[in-house]
Amino acid sequence: MQILHNPRIAVALGALAILLLAVMAGEITGPPIAGRLEARAAQAIAEVGGAPVEAHFHTGNDMPTRHPLLTGGEGLNEAVRNRVAKAVAAIPGVGGVRWSDGSALAKSADEPVHPLHCQEDVEALLRTRSIRFEEGSARIDAPSGELVDEVAAALRPCLGSIIAITGHTNSSGPEPGNIELSRQRAEAVRDALVRRGIPADGLRPRGVGSRFPVSGLEPADPANRRIEFSVIATVPVRPTPVDTPGPR
Image (cartoon, rainbow, N blue to C red; front, side, top):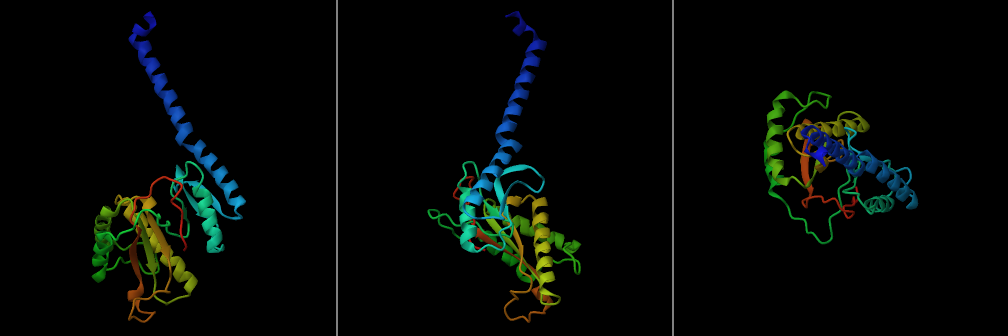
């Protein structure tokens, strides 16, 4: 086989083989499998009476993922939501499941959850300082950038955990607006942490408005405008069908 001894032909054949492998890998791990998982998830949701819930197997950057985001279940009771999450999680190939409204992942029955020191470190950072925002905005003010740097460093030992980011407001203004602003601020903090190397799939932002003022403070006190962090699962999320969301 003289053809195999020709360097140019050998290089061309090698490049062709790499191209074929890339195409095959794309068929296995890329958009095609995400589309198949979405179709199977839609069927599973319908079978358990979970309409109008939808399972999305693409990230915010439109990249395919095996870890679906469930939307449209805000008005469903917890029993239905639980059935939907378990049905989607049971599909072969599906990884950790999460809800768009920030539900936590259920604790695994055979893996105990223990507190990690990173939450204490973050609480210590925020005990005397706050992540502040421009007035009436979800834009983090410039002086708070250094504090966000410190929070990211404190959270780094918890990578692999699920970390809730909860936005709070005081009671000034209508509550629907407070809830929306607190959610936007929590999402802004999430995005800032992602830019500092904290994986987005471990962060769960949510806004609760003015419902939970600081103990001892009047609801209208400006000090109630704050961001809180909590480690709600300390076992790394593994891409298996047992990672199902728990109650809101």
